[in-house]
Length: 156
Image 1 (cartoon, rainbow, N blue to C red):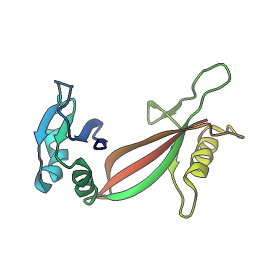
Image 2 (cartoon, rainbow, N blue to C red; image 1 turned 135 degrees about the horizontal axis):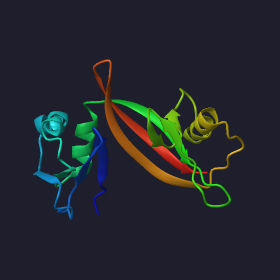
Image 3 (cartoon, helix red, strand yellow; image 1 turned 135 degrees about the vertical axis):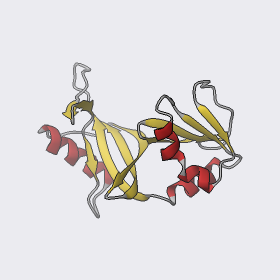
């Protein structure tokens, strides 16, 4: 079974998959080429009502790698923090609720970065990581350079 990838471009989900999607509200593009991948941000800008895009491919892994080639990768890590009562920790960042996360420093282990970022952003110390929650992908531009942020998530 092929692996599915999903990235957020301008807060819209774009999935790379082999099978026909179940979401009838997403735009479906079959066997996109490199120029189509490069045009995704403009497509989303031109259609602000678009809820998502599904890219169907006989080889989603190769398509994903082709997509990533156009971006500079940034690694980040964060935690979903749950206390003993089952409540979750949120922070307010730029007027929105978010989870504590941040960039991984050179030579830093991803797990250590996740704990460090929560401590820096919340002041909560002595966290114990109890689970791996996977990773998410988001794109943005920094000084005109297209960036792909891979965030590794943990449960603490």
